[in-house]
Length: 359
Image (cartoon, rainbow, N blue to C red; front, side, top):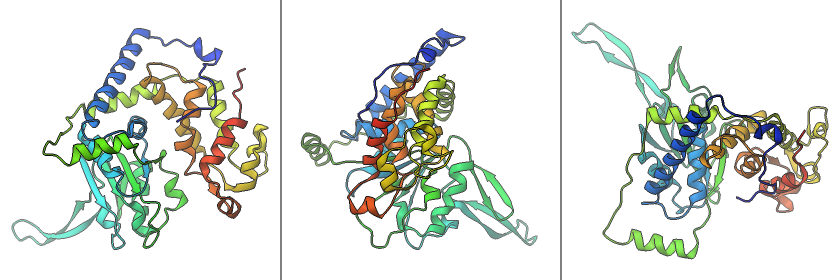
């Protein structure tokens, strides 16, 4: 994804040196090597879609969750399943349907007979959400009450059943897929749930050459299986490395001003506070991004930096991630839909209007 800002570091950031430079550089190298191995293994099954795979990895390293948005047949489910195969994690897939109930995801209490005939007792049977990697396939095909069964798990990494709360074992990663063209029999995701996703990734059609490679590789007798590259313990360590990456105040302020400018409300805390009110936001946006967007921009910027071999975050890291972080958090009004404007158009305008401000 192209960026509209220069790839440069703020002066404050470039002077920051880690207390143990050699150790941190070794950790960054380890993370880059892990990405190379993951790309290699995923590439055995998935042709192209490198940007999508990289964003999936970023979400995983940031302890976030990802929404894959694309028409049928583009390999959204296969990408998620293949990535899980490269990780030594527990994997579960749930096909969301209109008759799916919340207990089908979270689990439920059942009555069973005690051993020795001593009466009956309640026993909790965990649902598929008790895993490390959950694929929620076609999440918009189930009613809101079932979609909401994911909310607590995605935010707090726990599930409440009756009077008991059960912790989910880390790491916990949700990949949900959504079909944008089949609207009949679907239920739009509530804004509160959409906001829990760190990224909204648009999966696009392959190029002609990539499509030819897909046809060639899937119509023969040879099948390649990816190998596991990272264990659960390795992934948790890499997640800690990402969070330890330093970020300058200038870069944080740039992310904050970018998010604030998505809000059309004229108040001291809205877009006008940044001094960068954007005309497209005022005209087409009803509600802007929440503070979760700023958190996601900075955290994902850290992951992107280390995957490129840097132990600091640039302005360009924030700009490069603006589209997947912000596009699902902007609620457009009727004028936007009537003028055929989508959230990516608004984000493009934001990136042009909100300038880097190096103190």
